[in-house]
Image 1: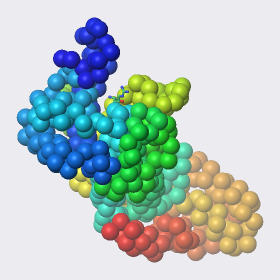
Image 2: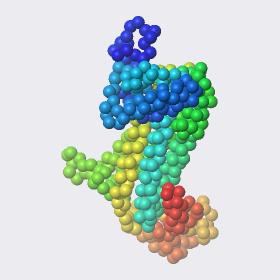
Image 3: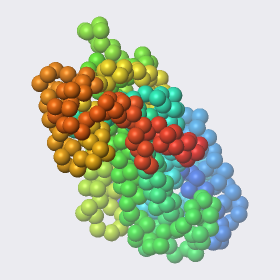
Image 4: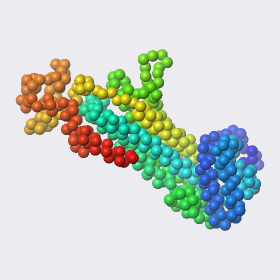
Length: 457
Ligand code: ARG
């Protein structure tokens, strides 16, 4: 097939080179945005008196026909036509005749592709936002449903202090809130209209770029034509925001994998989001969480890949930039899938109730409370810390838990201990006393729940 740019060439493109340089294999998914952008460009050409009204109308109805063909699976993709932009323009010309050749006046594929990617990403951020909100709501609902459950909180993956499970789940809702903010902020830089920059210098035709922006609902137009066709910051920024979102999903995945093990036994995942083993009949594997954790790596890879593509590029457009699309598309697909699977997995999961005995066993969750108890009786914290350390050492030697200690034994370690210590160090009281703003006490967690339910309406 003769290329649309073949005028100055004597030989036709080598097959190998065609396959190497083509992006039609993946940029076909931009078709609707390409057509939307072309319709707006066509109207702007008419406003600039470059196209007559009848011409503009004919081109626009031709473009709509092309769109129908895509929607009904009837568009004849021509792999030899490099990319989606060439495919649509060629098809338009086949359908309406040489008039189709006027559409590209005052435009280059350089500003065209920048526009298409921006339109695409704007839409996708909207889809991701919906899925993100859905996941946050699932976590909030699970927190509410299990609001009285206590789990051990960890540092260094060592049992540290008791916390409410709801508090733990809502920590992830906080992270999702920041992810959402980051994506909305990225959207500001995505939402800028580049058309009219043409190849790099702007165009000879008096295009009203603000009019094009209005048609396409962009709040801003790009300020500098060179920057407009060379800028992919917004793609990198999106993948960076997506990477942090994946970090959060991956951390929760890791917790779910641990929690679902018989060693932890905090959670029972539903059959719908787990798989069996082909050899070990007893197994129920948390594959959904493992895959989300695993797929995080490819999103990080896309970020590094794109930054590396961009770092050595002189202004303005360079063909290297075609390498922005696969990382972008795969990031969008991966993030959307992970959010949806995660919501399904968490929605159908059941949290097990941990008995006070299992919480008391091993770990000395309330050791810090013993130290604070001594402090409240007047012992300086450093001294109290030391006494508590001796108490723990004594328990370890004697094979006892803190709760199993009696007063005479405690008195031997410090005279300050009195009968009220046992109530003070009960797991429930330990939680309830963490009553600072942002702490794990029931009232504070209910406060968080109320606020988050409002924020994630
Ligand atoms: N397929 C190209 C891309 O994705 C479109 C822009 C091509 N521009 C050019 N001057 N060859 O970047």
